[in-house]
Image 1: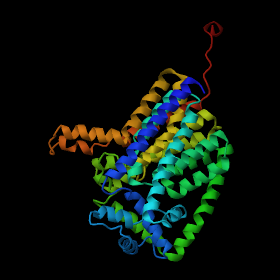
Image 2: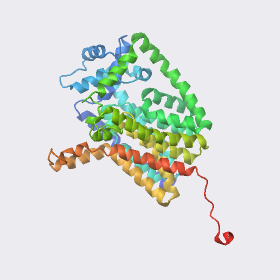
Image 3: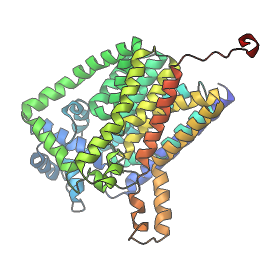
Length: 435
């Protein structure tokens, strides 16, 4: 291993050490840890006992019977624990945790979340290190050191994104391909809105990537079918019930209402959050977000279908896909760890040199900075220390949402470079020959 690769690896491991230590400390310090894991655990426990996991009253009854409902619980905490918004495909992977009591289950989930993210980071660094090991180590180490909220909340994004990244490594290295197929299938089943566009790009790219995408689709169906059939037996009306649960989160002043979003480690980061400031009407900000998203997706699809994939083009496409995934529908800041997939493209452009490489590094640093947990903790500390008035413009500082436009800029930049990479090189003619 070269000195540069060793230095890059040390930087990544330093970020991983900060991530692990801070996650454990903060998880034990907050009054209500693993709030999001409760949304997976208690509905799964309900299903194990042959009750309807999408009926809030039945999950709440079990939640209280098992001592989950404490006097310190807020209405929001209780809603998250008992009103399941996840598709039934996720039960295949959450049922094993639900077979355990709360203590062992949360410990196992925490270890799996931390371990999978560090492992996936090492694999993506291995890909980026082929071009720029120190830059890759710096970016990924910074991302890891700013990912504590994933562990504190226990959100499934940590595992889903890690599985997606592992699959990407397997497919691009052409090693452990069956494991990669299973990892991407599991990621799609747990959080399809995180891994869905990555799978779609593989399908559009053609060649062996399309084959992997189709194999993943079959694996997803096979893995998810038992959970779906089980839910259908216990809850024949689960589709309507899950839809009602989703609506309950997005109603006015609901937990996922983009009009009430604010910046922070758990903030909502889709385009609707900023567009709702212009016109506070769901018909407007939903339509406007789709009008921004769809043309970018169509450009990506058109170029991918018309060109043969190469390592460079594939990395650029995935770097455009990762931030684009987060923009049109509901996502929170911990979902933005999907930007891990932009590192190989950034390293490749940096190694090529020139203004494009420098701008790629700048774009990635900006993207990683705005999605960093510790970044926002520091920013909030500075803002509160200024004792700004709660009225007028100063009072609206915490409503300024820089994450969506930054993610849009990252996606547009890499999409632009991706489109440029498909053009044939312009041959420079010697002036004497031209004469």
